[in-house]
Image (cartoon, rainbow over all chains, first blue to last red; front, side, top):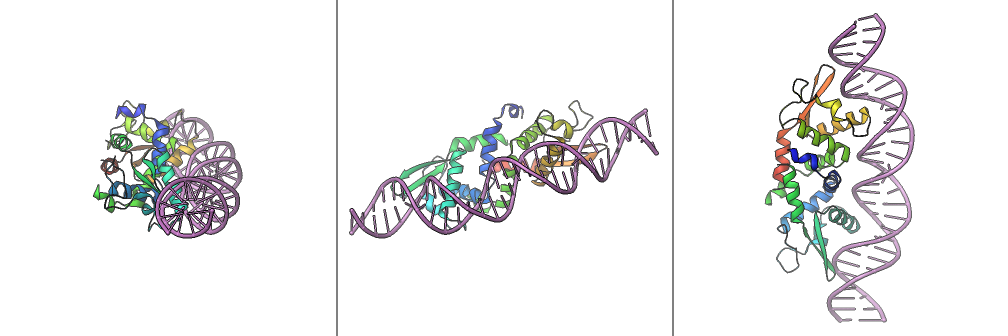
Length: 104
Length: 104
DNA sequence: TTTATATTTCGATATATGTCGAAGTTTAGC
DNA sequence: GCTAAACTTCGACATATATCGAAATATAAA
């Protein structure tokens, strides 16, 4: 674990902060199950297009979901792309690897 | 990643929150380098006994370090044990595994 | 028993965060 | 152009967090 001496503290604490809110963590987990990392969630596949759907049944408003999605994006955990009225989102796979390495 | 549907949201968000503060993350990282996970940092080994030392050169007071250590312990990330005047602390290895699994 | 060292607890305070609802923006379709 | 759907931005507010310094506690040592 000598690699830890060179860890980018700011980068990692930002990522952990993004995952520290239960609602945000739930959204993140929904993304990991609705699409494989590196794959966009489109309206084309059987699973629903992500953004609005991601917020369903979480007990928060759309504006709150939007805010959380922005935080996850800012932390580099997810990618976003508008497609028509909707906004697709998907897990950033490199960041996931970074985090996996961190703990192993 | 289907395991994510059964993730204990509260448990994980608490762990991520503990690591989301830069000072706390630094303390955690110092622990991972000063002792192997599952091994106590004692005054016996060459490396200094952990608790007070952990807070050095972080730019915060002792009371702040104490508070952060308590948070890390509450999140299940570290273990504590008083030994004389000092308090030893070490990484909780099971939690580390839990987190490693989470991201891989 | 007095003193020193290590750590914790307390109260205060400034700042950050999560959430809402209302209003704004973007795109699609009539 | 008008309306609806999906999403974002804004301002407000309540709550949580990080930090400090002072006082308290625990242990060791003189």
